[in-house]
Image (cartoon, rainbow, N blue to C red; front, side, top):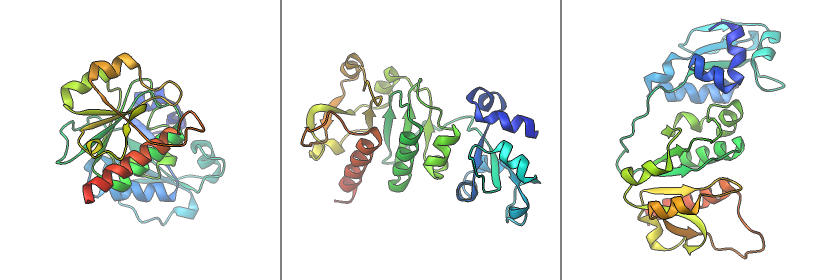
Length: 245
């Protein structure tokens, strides 16, 4: 890709138009290379480096650019001097792996929340992330950075409609105030777990139509709700405990 086109990848419409996104910084490039060892899709990436990283060991095509050019391409204020342009996944395998569970996020808006959730799913493994339409773009540079490379290791689907879940998952649970305790043994026995928008949650009528079973994280009720990423982290941890009991 031309440098002028790479600059445009900060915007979603150009990421979609060009079919690529930015992966910036040493750690993220290492994670991308690690993922490429088992996923040929990521092997189509291209590397851009300044002189500080010109000896970086990588099998990918690379282009040496100036510090000034790197500053123009990068999303961060003080770029490290290495970034990759990676291809957007074109298709997603909807066939779940054995024992895989799905985490569905309805209109998640905060890039940091989504990145943190992806890190949790990658850490424990065995989870697929489904995003509704209206969610933050997972290939937004802020999401990519906050995921710390987890983006390359978690099966991810975008623009998944709520009304399609019932055909895919016979047992659906959601996190909601007033439900059964998260520690209930029944919490383990679902295929898909729904989490709502940071401010609005999930529409009540949608939950009713999906016959979603409601669970809650017991607390002192001193405040109205938990941060979305915190709620997902606790739920996934509890599900993982159930696996190893």
